[in-house]
Image (cartoon, rainbow, N blue to C red):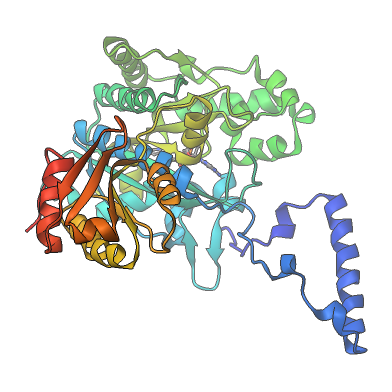
Length: 476
Ligand code: HAM
């Protein structure tokens, strides 16, 4: 039984140099504190910098410019998942700690040291989506409705890892699971779905696959592997020495060069598969070929979660430094039963959204740029008073409309119209208002025309909507 503790940053993160700095800062803090006590008020006034509250290390804001990329990514994913018949499910962030211990595995890095756990309450902020999704599937008996379920979920996950480029403590996944289908065609179809998503996001990545066998063939391989590793124990890193006893397969995908060199000659699980697992793997490879999905076999791929059986796969990039996996998944045929559900097979994968976003930026994936249908440049108080309800009515009709509220010059307002990427600008001055006329400027062609102004804002909005948008949806 593992003991869960609330992880404190100093347990994992800080190098000795940083610790020395901490000690120094601690004493500075204490000195300042004691000086405060002696009435030195100047030092007690926090600087502007000290007043600022910053985001927690490893937790990141997604600013408006970036959010455009994120929305594009999510819309693409929803579209593609829908084409493959997947339906959305939304899940809570907090779950009972036991759910992750029983599914991901007690001896994994995630459960051993990366979970954000409220130890006194026995709950954890989800480190991944599969366990939560299966918990919901079982709890609501979703299999009763439909024998095969294709579900997807999108949202934040939490792991206390050392933050670096492409690795955060709050990160986001787009996760798809197919439950109830044992056929290898489904494995191939899911990988083809992942590939389609990457293609449509303009991301190039390679696909690596492996099989981890099943409860019939894996134990025999495990024993052989332990024998092989024991002979090299003294040449492996500390973590891998421990893994020989707890999770020997993980030694195969240790990233440390010395360990990598040691396992080059290790037995391959692909040579130890039982006949049904071997047939399954061969059929998955044939399925990928039939769908034109390029892939390579990586016999060292193990995955950091214990629930996998048979097929495992990763989409890999060389463009993100150490964080090579942009999406990963596999089959987990015994897991649903292990979590108290029916004996149904399952397979899924999750894409890491931060990594996708970085690659889209690097590979300059073209994004839709939001535009304004109509900018109203009002010059003078009366014109502004006329424009105010007009802009509101335009928005009620489904158009994006904008105006300036600060009485700026025509030049400044035209600049603002450009910044909001307005398709049209309606220019109204107090004089034009008196003559019940305004100028409508097509911002792309720069052509201008005169339009008659109506007294009623709603009526005016209707006419403008019909003019600036051929297919405008006019809401009642
Ligand atoms: P995973 O390999 O742990 O698998 O994570 C999937 C993806 O999430 C990774 O390939 C990576 O892109 C992203 N990711 C993981 N950790 C971080 C992090 N700290 N910062 C940024 N991105 C990260 C799973 O989570 C499984 N639940 C996938 C699955 C679904 N298997 C079957 N169904």
